[in-house]
Length: 522
Image (cartoon, rainbow, N blue to C red):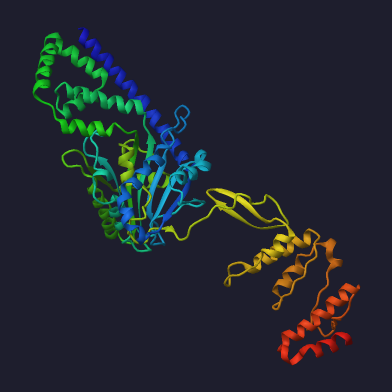
């Protein structure tokens, strides 16, 4: 009779929890869409291959991949959400977007991390360029077909997959190689949505399973008992009775003495040594035809076979169609987390799937840094006579000024090919000088710069303008090259006139006598 009462109580609690879970899930699903909109997208680019460093890079390749674990560890302690609000997530994406053959590495982070994200990355990768992307990219052909899938672990998440540490080559090479074969009018992407997992809970669960294995239970039995609900475990023990409990204890003691799978024990122990994330892995492909979209998707799925750890764990693809396909594309686009698609992977496993391309990787079309970016000088003046530009370095913007008039006279020279902005810089400096009340002389053989300057003369300086137009016959201009106001200017004018003759004719034609007569005549 007592057992029946316990069973009824158990069924009531399960029903109640089901209603609560359904209501909470619906609320969180709606909130997760808004959470996806409150994210900032960044494009991360790394330096290109340096063949001179090839041998060195090969030796350091695994160390460079491991640095991604440090970047990911910054997201382990995201702020806790409000009641019934979804936990913040981060998105890691490798994409060959529609309209381009380039392979780009994106990361989307919660908006409250926007100002510090570039510091996270460049603190580990000093040569990386981190650009904030104002508008999202797309991989979907508007009038085409889409194929998609998500990946799930075949076995319990405490069993690890193969990682970069036990693979001969960088696993990213295979993933990006399939993306490099996509044409510009097609698109595909690999997306990981990661959400922090309680470190204590993850490690405690693993330690509990290891303890049961040390008691002699096979790994899968130990895991089944570890993940068994405490309530179910309580009723099981009650139904067994004290005699069966004692008998099972004796069997466990015997197994402890006769059976212990060291390999399975070691791989589980290695998995729980590092912190973990709840992870969604989504693959999407788009093309003009359904057959081609599915072909691209199958190639992407095939590249994940390298993560299979023999007789331990691997990824199982879950292709989706119809309504499920629409839901997955929706979750991909809004970067929402799905509990149904969830895996638990540690830092090493995630870094094996997604890390920034090392200099050693040879996949073509990876979007990379074309030239180095240098930090601005530490003694850059905070103000000056002319604002000539702005420098953006690691997310910080600084104005660049000429410190003084003397600085501009001695250290300013514009050189560059057509279209790089020489005239634009001159126009801006002329405008600033006029507005600051300075005297300005502009000589322009084409006339466009003069027209721009005249259009930007402020009303309080109109009377200061003197315009020389030699082609204007209605207003002919004259210029007395020998006019002076002081004796010093007189000597200067004479000397400059003689210098003009030396520029026009060889010195032996003029000679000292000609110079003497000319000086006296003037």
